[in-house]
Image (cartoon, rainbow, N blue to C red; front, side, top):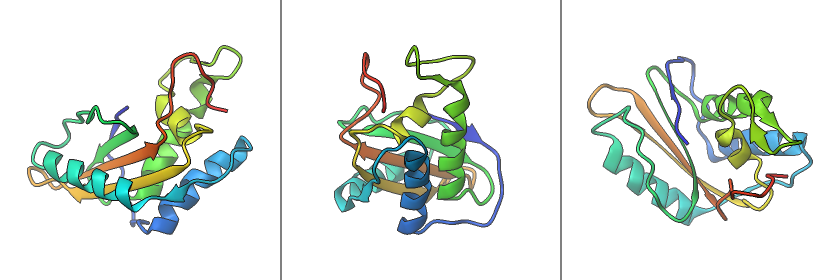
Length: 149
């Protein structure tokens, strides 16, 4: 899933910031915490570096992991990206396990019960000074026919 935004703020971009933002959303639905995965981080950085010349064209990698993408002007932090994805919670209907009235796939990936590891990259786009953000999740979530939690 991808998201293109225009916020500006002071960055919060440590590994702890990445994990804390995800794990706070997961705790709200009684899902255990994620852990950092250096292999996923390297995979994300490799893909982000390949995309940074054409931002904000958000193209999914099609790789084996769950994925959330975002691009934004300004000082776009990791916490802001997660907060925007988690804001999609309002569109997730647990009863039907579907999105109602808006996109919710970023949110469901964040809280996917079986996604236990996270890797992240954030690069400055070379064509316009935007930020490109990618997160990989393993195992992948958003499995058709299954509920996130």
